[in-house]
Image (cartoon, rainbow, N blue to C red):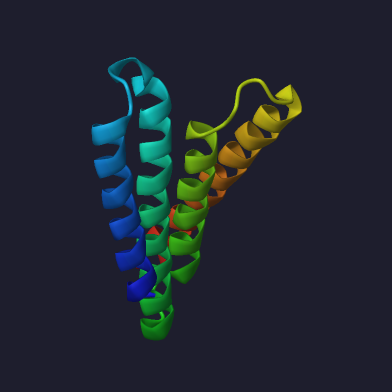
Length: 114
């Protein structure tokens, strides 16, 4: 898993170097979306690694899984193509609400147990 994270970071570095040397200044919006997408991929990989280590120590696994899912959905929203189907953005919005509600419920249950 650490190898995948290292490869992702190297891919992000190569992407940034290529962007800085080859792209015109005016296309910064597209570059930012691609950069955020790559960065969030690395963040999701870190979250999954944290989930694996938490599952080995048996602490708050469900809360971490929901947080990882929220990060993945946030990544999808950031790189979402607005020219696509409007039902897709509605479904992503519903997923965010459902995951946020689930996360809140799990946090409340974990607080009352401790």
